[in-house]
Structure formats: structure tokens, C-alpha cells
Length: 149
Image (cartoon, rainbow, N blue to C red; front, side, top):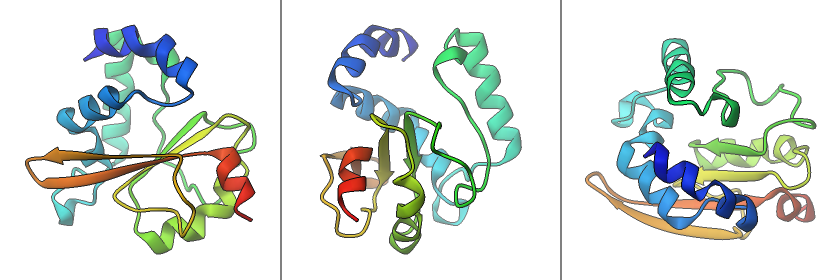
């Protein structure tokens, strides 16, 4: 998958979003299951997994492109923060998180697996078919979230 991601980097920057085929690759690789609670068949992120993901990124030569952290997103300063935030939270938590996500810097994107951010229309929506069923992945640009006050 890494050669394909490297190949699509310029296109993703140009689009200011992940290409559809990258979403499909992430789904096929089980990336979204890392964000899924263990009781629902996921892997549930833990500190050891964060360290393993960072080590894998370093071995693969993409550590400068990605950061893995286990932190409290409700108190984290996002104003100078990430360019992409990936969520797999229940709808009520997504809604509670909205004021925090609106602090992201210009150009940032928010990706949510399976659940929308309240009634804010996503900038992009993709449904992926998996062995566990279909999942919808939503993408919002921070400008869309800020306009939804």
C-alpha cells in the first residue's frame, strides 16, 4: 500500500482530500478497525498500538507524513494542529466534539467512519463494502465546519 500512497500524495494535496481509492485501500487494510471499539469487533487503539504504528511508519519511510497519538481530543489544542483528524465515535460524541474541531487550522479535514457530525452536510461521502458490511466514510473541510455555527 505504501507505494500507492506515495504515488497519490501530490494528487491528494491537489484535491485537498484523500482520493477515493485511498479510502478503499485503508478499509481493505483494516485501518478503520483500529479506531473501532473492541466490543464491536475492532482493534481499539491502545498505547502499544500507537507505538507500533509509529515504528511501522518509520520503517516504511513515511514517518514525516503521519503522527499517531493517544490523547484527549476534547482538551487538545487543535488550533495549530493536524491537517487530518480521523474519527470513529458515536454521533453524540461527534456532536460534542464539533466546537473543538472548528478550532482546526485552515485547510484541515475531518474524516468520520460511520457517523456524521450532527446535521452538517459532508463535503464528501463514500460507502465502502467490507466483509463486515458496508461502512460510510464522511469528510468535512474545516471551513464547512466553521460555517455551521
